[in-house]
Amino acid sequence: MEDNNPEPTPLRYDQKGLRGRLARVLVAEPTNEIDWPADLPAGIEKVVILDDEPNPHHTLRVHPPGDPSRVALVVFDQLALCEDAQEG
Image (cartoon, rainbow, N blue to C red):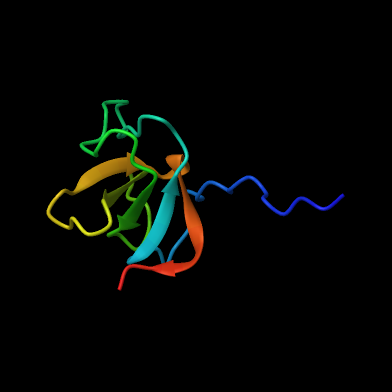
């Protein structure tokens, strides 16, 4: 039996080319590098990535789709790329 809905693969710490990509949030409460809650709406499922690659603290700047003024830091492995999706 073929799995048509595989589990999303978390981003890698060395992944590049992320700027502008839409990502799925893999955890119920996204956090930053010191495990503090990210400043994102409760229950958020997708975010837009602002950085090209994770920074030395293993975080990425992200914002909710349609709300670029609400920037938050999220640890890279709490995110997975959405297939073929970019913020326009």
